[in-house]
Length: 278
Length: 265
Ligand SMILES: Nc1ncnc2c1ncn2[C@@H]1O[C@H](COP(=O)(O)OP(=O)(O)O)[C@@H](O)[C@H]1O
Ligand SMILES: [Mg+2]
Image (cartoon, rainbow over all chains, first blue to last red; front, side, top):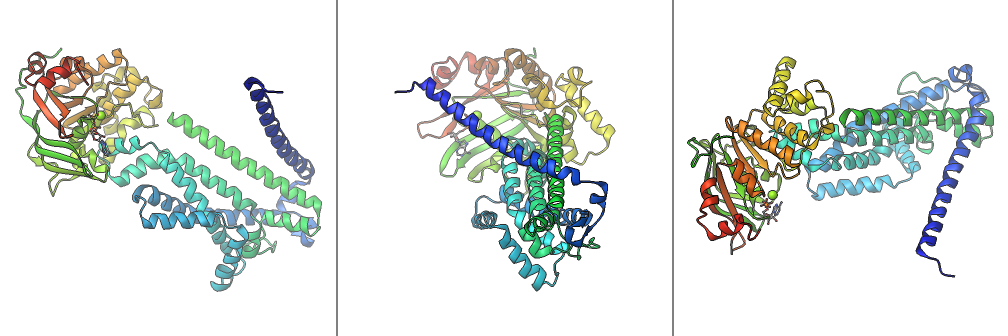
């Protein structure tokens, strides 16, 4: 039997739709499953108490604080270096040897599994620099881990700014720096922020690299030099060591809610920005 | 419409002397010598690829953005050497503004599109910026249309309004020369007419140089016309330069005649 083009078109469309529906359905199922299991656990006490008896009892307050501090530190470190490098690559060099070395390094770094960053952070920050298992070791390690992504997404955003905007800016007698800061940067900001938010998500969800550098002690951190346990690590330990599936689901549910929240905020930001510009 | 002059009785604003321009090994402009009058409109015409845009971009050194470009010969703005050793590109571009082919409104609101230039030159006082924005918009006859909507995104204007906004943006910097590279070619006839009227009113204060493919437009608006063409040596050259009326009624060169009567190009 031979298929007419219209028939094969229809079959292909149906298959693509089915595949998409299956994936979306699966994702929704996983999310709903975890939320249904986990949301009832989220009481005020669970959110404000620190874990007790290995996490069997108590709450997850210290892991929320730990997650926030490690992530904030990593982002604070990566923003100037990552975005600065991206601007250097996109605006100040014309494919010379330095650019190629930086780009090659960044691309190679992006493909390395996170546990290798963890090992590096453990050897360099924890042991060699004597920072111990701490928020600062974890933040620095995560900063290295997300640096390639931030560089790449920022560079893409910068290169996507129409060349004519630069020309117009120069024709208005702007200097190179004014052109970059007043025209290119605002136009690329959206893409840059999106890349950074993507990295926030990765930091929040990371386990291997954090366990090796920030540790897993669940006391309330008192400074950036305290060791900490992030929510993802807490969840991982609770589940993998069979300590408390109930609390693991509670932690996971909050993680999902957090990630959703980040996305919603990002979208709101994007939409506001678009509404302002266009 | 403004009175057409056989030769503008104005001082000379820009001069080129044996100007040669190369894109790497490619010789794009050969030996161009011409004087451009202040407070008048000069049209650069010629077939595609003959170097009109390249010549226009010599005057504000926009070609500098292309790394392989080399310029020989002399270009003078008043008595200042444009390509001289002590020339400052930033202050040159403050004096020589540019309007591009397509309306290139920044994705900002109307007010900020105009204020961006003056802000770069250190004007911070709001009252002063307000004044510049109003004056520039009034000069392009856009003030009455947008004065209640200054915070509206510039990209929401019609293409014709956007192009006038771009002209306002260029004159907000208070240039002395305005370069327009086919600035009407993307617009409808009505918007084109508005911009042509605008050119006449701006001509009283600025030297305007336009590139156009539209012979009627060149004849309508310009005082002087420069006809460029690629010669036998593949180099863009100035075939004929003189008062527009003279060139269109009695072209001196056979090639000019063929071009303006539409026989080629
Ligand atoms: N950036 C560039 N690099 C190399 N050659 C160029 C560049 N820009 C223009 N040219 C060449 O210079 C010649 C003149 O171009 P242009 O000034 O744009 O012509 P016009 O504006 O008259 O159509 C053309 O042959 C074009 O291919
Ligand atoms: Mg051109």
